[in-house]
Image (tube, rainbow, N blue to C red):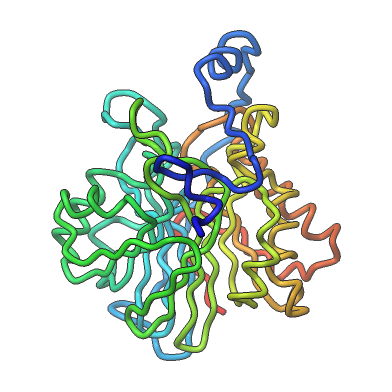
Length: 326
């Protein structure tokens, strides 16, 4: 039987009828009719000096370093994992237009340790960057990339030697880790003619004494409890909290902070592990993609976290470049 997220005639769709509203008319209404006022930054975004271990961490350790947006260096024991790597100045097909970084990457590209695994969630420009892929392929040729269906050709064309493509609920082994491709609610496409021709996903990684969930880019959906039941519980959940305003436009594809905390609780709930895991808010503070104040997403997420009675020390609001170790 064809999975419900495989669209008739090819390509992919969100199960359950989630409607993606990113049509030209909706975009024009947002940009020119609503005419949003964007609150300016209050000051420089916080930065920290990275403290990850070079070349590799010790077995049994787990550390997370935020490069920016959805790019993180996760050291799971001696394995170095990158998520949605993005080092370019703009999230755009060209470097003279499009959303520009509000602050430099928290980790200089040249300072990266040897990369073993790259988790790729989908093909949008703020998550899959042409120049960054080429740089990683040249500097870390032995890295194993895991990607959703349809993204492999893009990576191979830019020099990636080892890439496997996966459907939802596929599992694979890399670097002594068990990596599972999990559902997300989003869409794909880098141009006008490739809408939803490749898949989008989240990732669950287990092994070396740790379990990590990387949410990628997603709207809130009803599948988080199922993901948690099958693949959890998680020591660390890296969940997107930004790019949510206006809600009438962004709700299907981007969680707001309250929804992200709810998603965390549903991921952990099947195992009674809500108070044992760590929540790391991502997908904020690097590119101004939507209308909410840049600093608002993690602040609101923390407010909802505390309102839920969850331990304050398990909410990790990272500065760009900051490393924290479990």
